[in-house]
Image 1 (spheres, one colour):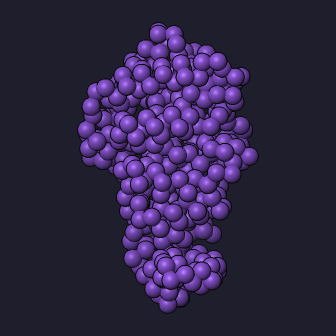
Image 2 (tube, helix red, strand yellow):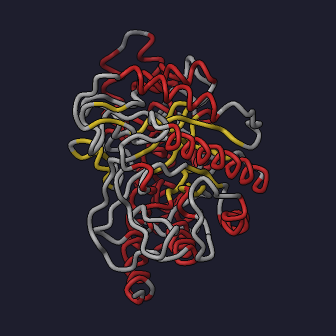
Image 3 (tube, rainbow, N blue to C red):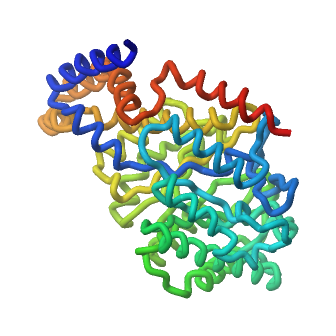
Length: 422
């Protein structure tokens, strides 16, 4: 009965969108070819598996809350991700941090990690994902306590982190070869100062030298695509961040790397959507980290708000989805963690679907003829179109839960799995 209701609602919606020149069947086919990269660190509050009781520390980031059922080992984390995937339409990727290897109870420092520590992730990904992405972990470590890693003026500290970055590149290349899809490797370091430094250029010169060293060995983009991530400030780096937007954008253009734009890493009034067209006129590809900043970079769970609508509208309007990698980056330990993944992923995909359903040709005709009233009125009309009916039909045909089923599925998993964990 419910399936028939969704089908009938979709048929009505399809006719309404067709009157505007939008083919909803073609839109749903296009949706299938846009993967999100689901961030593993939502599943255990950015702790990782280096030690039995590993927790996030330092690095200008923080997770609050202690909701029951946090993943305690790789098997639990993989099971939780699989449950989340079952509730998210489409086929998606998984984004790993370097502390999520399987180390067999042995102490393996970050300058010693190898592909073998991640081979089980590769085996699992062959069956369950569209690929794996990777990140170096430059926080939650004694050698990051000074606030400087790749920009440290201590040669020993700097050498440790350079080696870590090089090993992350090897692991990313390994994933790309094993899975037949390039790994996106993102480099973000929390380096900076709580109070005003004197030698701003000195630290940045060191960071530039470290990056040159890290990237000195060529790796085929067939296996590895690399990005560098900017940030405005963080906890403990309020006065100065070495890897500013200007620094990394300049370096990316010079070195042929992608820039990573995180929705929470800029001034609160900056619209990240507006940066996409500028960056992609000068770079081939771009990495996005989709989060929901509250006040500033608090990495709240993504919801369907104006920023998310604008971001995905710009990706579709610019016709650059084939040049953009979309990763999620939020973490909240105060709620059901599977629910967090599902809510944030589905909100992102809803925004993508809404953008695909725009009658772009008609909107452009109005704009280019100077009929700005008609452009405005049509954009307003779209807000009351039966978008939800198309979304539920997409979920139904993708074997994912429709909207009215999601909460029950998440709560059942919480009752039967999460709350049974110690």
